[in-house]
Length: 463
Ligand code: F0G
Image (tube, rainbow, N blue to C red):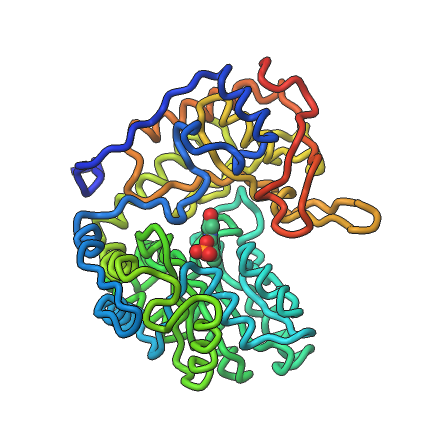
């Protein structure tokens, strides 16, 4: 059969509240034109994130019922630990309430002021957690990942020449850890090749620097390796995953992505003395090491989800839906990051709206217009999220790309939902020449995109 179907049936449904364009115009104005500040009841199709938004399976709900809430030594923890051992292979498994808690614990044990932490591209919380220790996050994306329009099978790769140069010029003492994010979320949800991971691992071993993986979308990355990398097509997903993590000293994980869970994460590693220090920190802010800020039932849902996410039928459907969305809007003339990523399609807002300069936030225009057009919520990944503002002069430096992310929650939307998204996006694209930009009128000094407020620089909602 040529048609790829959702490999599940739906037994519980959640209603979607329909809204009109007129209502949405008012709601958006009230939210300061920042979709993070909308109520989710006012959203028809929520593509804000694929994080914590998965639909759980019957087996996961069964796990929730089985959850044991003992403070210490719960069997739920041991089932969770066993799943992480089996899949990732690391010796020490530290549960955390989500990925950023694992990051905070890792960086606060490894980094000190003046250090440099390279990554293919830091996710925003990763960057902020490195900075919180006084160290400097440094992005080293491979050159073939930088042009949104030019396809390449592994646009998430790290630039290993620059990594070697950094380690040689700064010295390995200044680099407490090298990290690679799979898939590279900020760089367009693009995968990292096994060849690149092997090379980064070899360089780190040569220089004696620990190598960690930000594992959030590890199964999606492994699927791309199986599909696209020479010599990998015959291997199973668990085999590829096992090799990926055997190359590293540890990983941070947000189970809200490829754990198919609504909350949770972990830090896993092989270094025993480091793990001991990290468990002490965990007790301080997260909880005892056999629950780490999670309920026993959450640990059960993750243990099941980590296995389900490796199923090939699931991964095939997952990638087919993201690809379908990407190809349909791209064929309709909307420039996207090519090829579509593992969890999301990224619209190139700078190319879609060439008449809106980066400092007038073209990505924010696309985000607001798609909400107005179809009640679709998505997120700007451009100057709002990654631009920088001089605290003294207020002068703004734009980000290197102006993207808008359409992230698909896992196992949540059907084909007709995706068809609706395509229709709304193309309908907005038809009237793109009539729109303008936005300006930020309120912002916080860190992670400003979550709470900033905006004003349109054109007649919004009259086109
Ligand atoms: N690393 C990556 C690559 C991520 O995408 C995220 C979260 C995190 C770390 C942090 O994990 O949210 O569990 O603390 N990304 C979400 C997103 C929020 O929408 O892309 P967390």
